[in-house]
Amino acid sequence: MRFVIQRVSEASVKIEGAVYSDIQKGFLVLVGIEEADTKEDADWLCNKLISLRIFSDADDKMNLSLQDINGDVLLVSQFTLFASTKKGNRPSFIKSAKPDVAIPLYEYCIELLSKLLNKPIKTGQFGADMKVSLVNDGPVTILMDSKNRE
Image 1 (tube, rainbow, N blue to C red):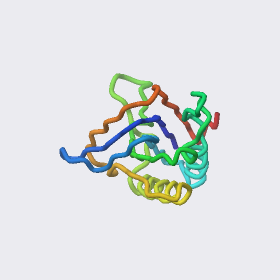
Image 2 (image 1 turned 60 degrees about the vertical axis):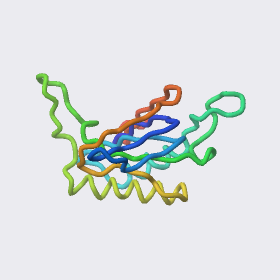
Image 3 (image 1 turned 90 degrees about the horizontal axis):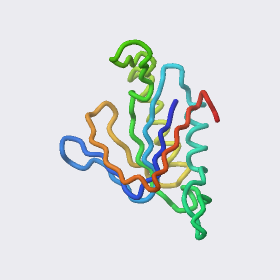
């Protein structure tokens, strides 16, 4: 499982021209799920996410977590995070999980983050054609992969 985490001052998802979800200060998280992923992958990523100290403190040092600032999360599924570009010019998405695997894990991430942060998590809509907007704060963008826990 992969998370692309973007520290944002605001972010939103539109579906069919209407705002579906939006947040202010917090994280826009793009979630990629592959066939081999399990709840253990989601547990590791979600717990790490809420503890990442990448918000500025009073001394303008990245020292505060999402929990510290009571930030929001906008969680958006994105199967293209497992695109393979090894052969040819058209990406292959064979590593991306099919909906019967991906949807339950995506929903598990939503539930877990909501529980860990004690607040609702904003989302995109799985499988929808979404227009995602954001103001990346910094910019700060971090990639986390549950199979490569660096």
